[in-house]
Length: 633
Image (cartoon, rainbow, N blue to C red):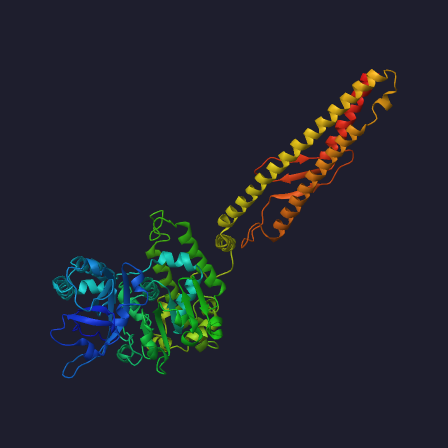
């Protein structure tokens, strides 16, 4: 079969040191592995210092930056312009700890970055770890004149290039599980957005995370990380110019099968740019008329202030939000019902196996919800999309033809499950035109043209959607605040109610004592006085009854105000920013016939307290009157 010809492996890895000068700003100090030449002048790499020392790098002990460069062709060499990739490791050292420092060191700290440049971004995972160790060792010397450790590092990079390493899929970056757990259904929105090739900006205060999220997204398209030869400049289009339609396929060979299906889709060709970290000095490239689409990252908040100018979609990692400013893009990225069922299933598989202590792997240590599981799900989704699109074209061609030309086990047009608005927008992209031109028209004979979650809505889909929506509400966090507020209010209320009881009983005892004295005086002064007159209230008893009534009114007023407060909180929410309602409430029970009116404070976790202060006072009066009548008789 015929495919795009590979670029000769003539590029040798380079290492350079970038220093931050107090007066001149960031600049390249040394080149290692350049054999006396100046790669900066030869390839116009004057922006490397700004890419290697990203904005805000001084705020971290160690920071990494990933970026793309154009390695230009030179006269007399059979080398085509191609994209190469740099990764920098930034550190800083207290100037007082240095064993030797030049006259240019005038600040309290020295900041430098060690940069490795390679044409194999798929090896970044191992390269990052090596670069981190080497940079730490170089800084530990506290004498930056000694470059021996960096020279040995560059020599190791040049010798360690093997074809076996190049063929391995080395996925790196932020865990896919973490992305799915963080963005949930919007993860599929980001994936479909890549296929539409808009102007896409990823922003965050942590440079390495910004870069790794982009690499993780493009790694969802099989083989794309190894096919980025044209991504550094919108004028480069060598991959599309040399790509030919395969004339054979070995279904037992995954590489052959994917090539026959047109994978990877060429997202970064003519008119497109991929810049994992893009400094402000590169904005001219983004605003150039030849740049139609891009995927870039930035840590500078100035781009956020002008997001409508520089991007169609903004992914803000600090706020965990996705902002689509283009209305047409927003309509094209609306998920279909089958799409939502598919991503809900994937999200649930991750959430059910989520482990906060180790987000990178399922807590069950099984296959479901793992990194491999997620990647294969997205691969299945993409291949089914490609087959469904080819079958859609086949249906259009044979809409009035022989029914035998159609697939018997496929009903209708399966491409409709992917949202017609998305398909219409995808048809206008360069990657679709290249794919459609260089692939066979009967791909659906190899891959079944069916959405992975095609069909009607099932009860499992409804339960899964409800579980996801409930999880997004974070009810446990919200109710924990509500429980705290209710508990505090109940404790305060119990304290006040207990105090009111104590005052009421004190007043009742005072009244009973006064009545006993009055009864004794009555028996001594007039033993034959009528019992009703003996029981008539004196000034002391009237004062005691007034005290009881006043205490009852104070307790009732307090409970009424507490009940009004609880009713208001029940309607508006127990705490600011928390709309969750609570079951605990303050209610006044309707009095039944022959029974006193009772105020009730209800809560499922606390006992029920019933109060009727006026009824208690009236009952105490009746008991005293009966007792005095018996004694007088």
